[in-house]
Image (cartoon, rainbow, N blue to C red; front, top):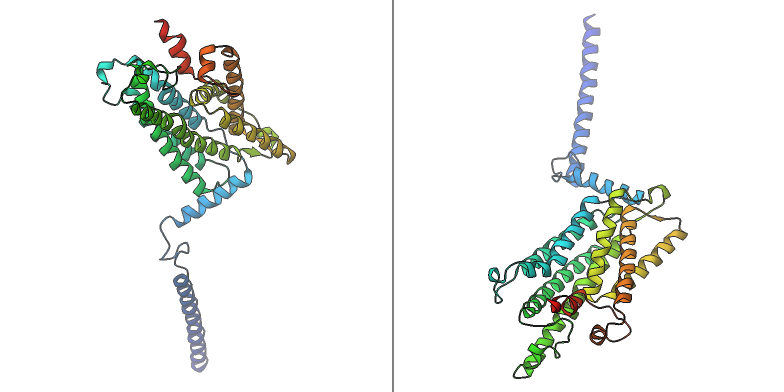
Length: 339
């Protein structure tokens, strides 16, 4: 009996000893694996937020697989609102606020509007890109945003001086050399300086501002396709935003003199829609919003040009095949001159 008990006790010690050795071996192997892979989830060397990044990466892949996104009512509303207030409202604010509050040798209220626009618009564009259903080339996005800010800042300076000249009698419907307050300057080389300022304002600034702007919108538009036709519809709020959005782009195209850039972007969007349709892909709500906004803009520009087609003064300032008068040139010619 005692011998049997002693034999069983020795066997029990042998079994538990081998089990402990096996457990220790497994723990040692897991520790070595964690040392080799310090970022493994749950390990002591795991980076903070690693599991969150993995989950976020998985969600992004899921969104790309789905190929669609809900309508960004908040972003499009803020985007349209700040365009109307900070861009279209700039010159209006300069005319409304008393000149004594903002002397001619100081920034005007419109300049502060422009500064806010140069900050808020790139931020909203980046927010829009972050909600893009698929990943866009980051380097191209960054370069476009940087160029946009630089061009808008160049335009800020030129446009500020140009609007200050209006208070001195400068007429937007005339060229620089034909303006009465400019052509009598002495020495005449000063006129070249004002033409250089006009070039920075109307050509270089506009190009560096609007080309990356429309490029970002087109890149975003290229991702707004869904394989489900049922998702190719717009909510009622989106339809209401189309009108102010299209009307603002009309102002942007006419006042910015970027009709060629706009029509090229619109045709590229139409060609992309037709190409994707062959693959049985349809525009989602965000893509439809942009497409309808641009279509409305094109209609408004056509009506604007047809209305002023026979205006002799504006025809002289805007010669050539592309005749798209600026709204503020029309204002100084037909509105302010009658007061």
